[in-house]
Each structure stands twice: as C-alpha cells, then as structure tokens.
Figure 1 (cartoon, rainbow, N blue to C red):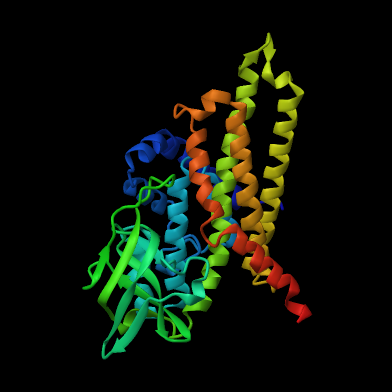
Figure 2 (figure 1 turned 180 degrees about the vertical axis):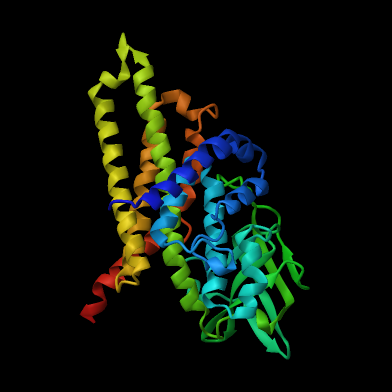
Length: 376
C-alpha cells in the first residue's frame, strides 16, 4: 500500500528520533536495566503515548496502520523501549475507548503526556495463553471491588502508576478495572531476570484484598474479555511492527557489513551463499511489511476477518523477523556474537515476541478456528 504524505512524515519523525535519541543509549539501557522515562516522555511530546486516543483528551487520533509505522520506526532505535510504549498505548486506548467520561478525563490526559505510566494486566501464573480461565477475582463490596489474585510478566510492574487489570467478577464473566499504584493491598514481586527487554521493568503484581473504587470499572461488568481480545488484535500488530523495524535495521547492518568485510582476497558480498541469504532476508521483510499493513487495515475497518488477519501477521512477522536477525548475526560471524554490535541484543529482544500477545502456537489455533468456523 502507498503511504500518505502525513504517514511518511510521522514515520520519518519517529525514525529520526529513534536513531538520534534511542539507538545511542540502547546498549546502556539494556546492560544496566534502565527504564528511560525521560525518553518516553519525549516520545509522548511527539504524540506517541496516545496514538489512537481522542485528540480532545490529548491523543493523536491516528489509525492502527499509523501505529505500525510508528513502532516499526522506533524499533530501529530500541526494541524493548518501543515495545513498552506499545503496551502503554494499549492500556490507554482501552480506557479511552470503553471508559465513561469521568474515568477518561481522570486518567487519559496524563497517560497521553506520560505523566502517568500504564500497565496491562492479563497474564497469570496459571493462565497465560488460556486467558479465559484467569483466577484473579473482584468481589463488589459497597463502593469498592475487593480484588485478590496474581498477575505475571507485567511490563511496568512496580513502576507504573495504573494497572488496567482483567478480573473475574463472577464465575463466568471477566471485567476490567483501573487499579492505581497507591491502592491498599497492591504489591509487586522482585524484578524478573530476563533474556531481553531489559530497558523495561517486569514483575508479578499481587492483589491481596485490594480495594478498588467501583467507578474504576471500565465499561460494564462482563465486558472485560471482549475488551481484552480487541486489545490483543492491536497489540499483535504492534509487536509485529517492533519485530519488523528491528529486523530491518539488522538487515541493513548485514548489507553494509558484507561490503566492508574481506575474506580470501575479496569482499564477502561476492560470495553467492551470502547473496542468497540477503535475497531471502529482503523478501521476508517485504512479505512481513505487506502482511502487517494489510492486517492493520482490516483492524481499522473492523473487517470480519480482522482477528484472523492480526493473528496471521503476528505469527508470520515475528517468526520471519527473528530469522532475519539470526541470519544477520550469522553473516557477522563471531563479531555478531559480541555485545560490541547490537545484533545479539536484537536477537534477545525479539525472541519474546514469539511468546507474548499470545504465543505463535496459539496464533495457529486462532487462525485454524477462524478458517473452520463455517464448517460446524
């Protein structure tokens, strides 16, 4: 698809910021596990903390296609930081799209400016991909919900100001609450020691008789699972976009490297085996880009097959782009294995993209279910 002049403009703004402000710091953020809040606030000033949020509340009012362009561009600088911003956007979008006016006005402007940081709490120790069987419960008691349960692998855990949390409000329904960091009964586990995504904090989040005002309910009781699945359609697009931008930057490094490196008296770009690798990498990147943008358009249009398209894009793009980064590292040989180059960090950061927002095995389940739906 051909991008509009406006789309090209904000893609270029995001990429320039990524190269100038994120890429030079990404190694230190990763090594020292620094959460770059000031950098994220700068991104918010560009309109990237409320990408598809109402302009009246400080958002940019852009589309899902637009968001994939932004996250693709930002991932040229730091995959982990771009991915966290995607999660923040998803939680903010959920409040803006489904919350009442009081709830939106109370939280959304501060989230769009990144004066407040948001986390999304769905995954549990016993309910990762099986999201419908979560066990965190919220029992209504007068003016409060009393919440008990545990959420796992929460990006922003221990740091975020609000936690958009999926809870059971009865045995058969899931609801969504905004839980603030100073809520009584809210606590956090130790920071997880991770393979990648080290520029963002990650921990378990515990609710022990946690008191949450009833006005912090998003939408109606029982609507939470629907909200979660809609959010995941967009989240899958964005995490695929983060994979795409990272893989594109790794590919470009590989192209430059084969022109510089010499073996056996000639530049290694003259070896056909490497030429074929580059050809396959370029083809996979182009296929990924086309599939991702097509899926994003379907989500924007609320097409009947939007969930299947988003799952297909997430599965294909995250797998293909991980392989592109792996091949780029291989082309660099031993140098690719060193932390002097960003490729080993790229590989570590991308690996989790095949797991989160629903594992790629679950993407296949979703795709197959949608294909066979009409046969029952």
